[in-house]
Image (tube, rainbow, N blue to C red; front, top):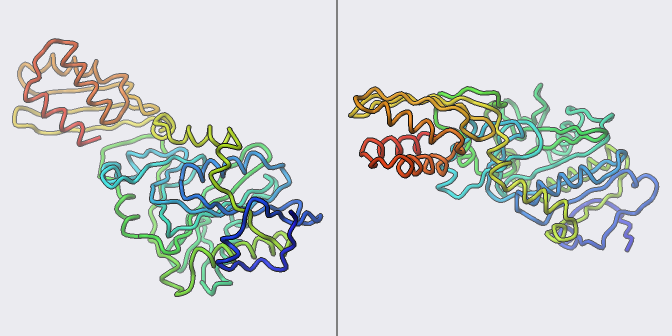
Length: 365
């Protein structure tokens, strides 16, 4: 079915009725442009769809993809989650951690955010150009945004959307998270990690004051933002009559590569195992002695451990604990497994001191 749309104004009715049968009118100007909106709020699914759109389109295509996620924290491809967010609080609140395919910093997603992705030929890729497109869309909503030197979207000194990008071969994309009506208190809680003596090679997030569009407009919402971005996308690429194609969960069954990418994004090996090498140094004064611990961790695995216990008759315990820890995942499960192996493998009784040491390490990582 081919549908000519006289304008790209979206009403709630129009947005709800976009279906798989709708197509862009394939006149010559529109062949280079496609626009999609996800009906799914699952962050792993949406990121897998983004990657599929990025890799499946020919090099000349310009693609707009709009999507929203339920509550989660998303970190950049080369970041260290132990340094970027409060993993314990997230676990308590059932907030998942997700590592995306692009670089950039950590962000908090909820249904009050709208994510945008602009995919284009590599030769035409320019971060400021893409960010300016979104800024112009906000101007049409009477929101006075601008693009700063880091290519973030801001209102005054406050950030409303960060940005990240990915370049592979002859394709590139720029994407960001627009804070429309997001829970900024939750953002502050989850993206404020406990202070740790940790150094490594991971890319650190740049902390910035933030605001949301709701503070600057009584009428802006997900629908109006998507409508304005779609219109500005059409103006920018000189294709005025655009419509959005809806994407849903059926894609997972129709396209095995989306399902495979979705499944990989959910694995521990991707989420934590892709962390660049780091060193975490810990110390604690127990009633029975001082303990110093140093962990070298690469791809989420403890490759080297140093445990010093300044207490009488604990040297053997420290040596056996080092052996048990090396090779374990740097996680509560890995620490627990090391202490289980220590107790079983040596035949030694689980001393009160050993139980305290385990509890401390579990709390500290």
